[in-house]
Length: 320
Image (cartoon, rainbow, N blue to C red):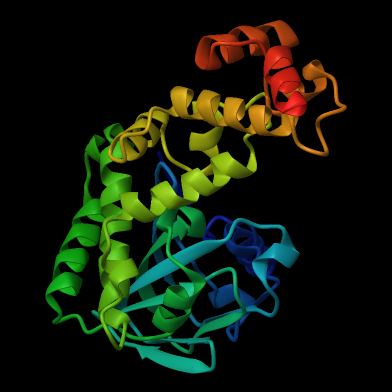
């Protein structure tokens, strides 16, 4: 899906507030300031949405964007932003570092942490935004990568520059037809670029994204195992991927989602039935605590798996 925004149709006195509101919606950023007169402000913006990935082309004059607190306090989505400078110069400050980004160079910043992005002249940029949980990299890796320029002569940067230029300059609808293919390609390129910023090559950043994404998915599943509405569509939505991608990520680890959830719920229920906390609880309450719709459904699944009913299991183990 593509969208276009422009300030040229607005009255001069409305342009600055419009740009400030766009920045808030995209990044939850509280401070946006222009050094130019309202009549000279311009900022055309084109956005392509590829699943969880957002690719934007931005042109405009001098601007300063500042975040002063963590994104969690602003209640906005936490994203990592890759900026490719096409013309002009901008400055990115984060984690006590400052990067002066010139045409052809890349820079990364973590939108969930305090940062400053500023420029004193007209610029043109391509930005790629990815939710942090989809990028699936530790905070330490993102911290080490932020506010560091990436040399455009690096082979990975050359590939990324060509890819993103062709993506935003495509005139046909092809880039909208396969978001499940183009979005993951953007993510892999960003991970590869982050790996080039590490003082010592980061195994985590260089690792294929499905491995770290799998870790995030499994952590989420364990944390929400007792939720009765835990489903493939919910897990996929929480991680900004399609259901097809979710099944693919898990299949690479030999995991069948439905079987894994059922097995883990039965194991946790079996443990709780004879635990000090659960031995006096009703079988139905234990079943519902671990996501089963009813005691009868739980009892059938339990007996099929362990060869005895939950009640028999509890009596035999408590007697022993």
